[in-house]
Length: 267
Image 1: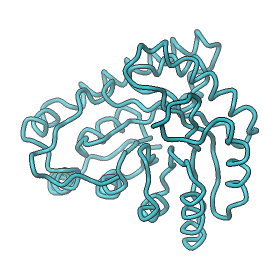
Image 2: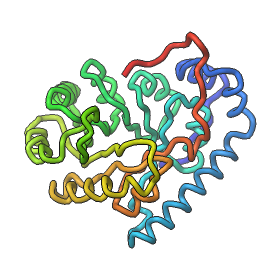
Image 3: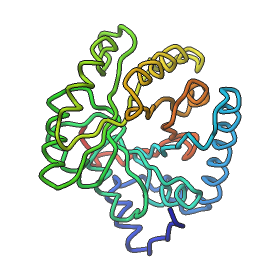
Image 4: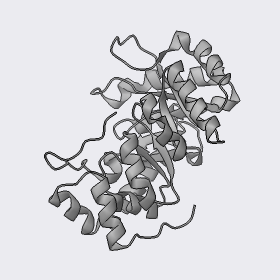
């Protein structure tokens, strides 16, 4: 994709408001040298990916960085795009929809949970959904995409442990779930996403990443995308086969806070 143009001041202000009325310190942080700071962070992330790929005997070009931009202002996302990142992830569909008009030329990813009443946004923005975990949602995506004359793309969120409160399709149910999704008109399954338990050391995620990569191989060549790893553990994920890494704080720094009383997008 080509170089990303900077929006004019009015467009930037509008987009920042749509992103959630950021506190003044957060706005000022990006208005003072944000491009340089983000560019340097992006370069460090690339270096870490290259080193991890070498350890895993992989081509670093097979790994796409998804800039996890939850609550980030449009100016920060544009800075990441100018640094060469053209895949952007949002947790909330409303936030994605509000930012998208001011950030042309990027590929959108929905990396949080999606309610069926928000599938229109995912389809209209051509977003890759990383968290498909139910047939009702799969059918809703396919139906909306068929009505729009397009194809919705999704990753199945898989659960490879026995955590009772975890979201995702249990590994034992994955073959049947995948087969059912393959029959839905207007829906294409691109691969798998996994979300290991939070709070541990990066190495503690390795087993979950390795198991997810094994499951993807069973699904066949059309479903080989692997969304695994975030800022704390993406290097381990790359070593185990990740093709998509969801990186937020390692690119943007600490997540901005919203002003008290500002609108918070629902899930």
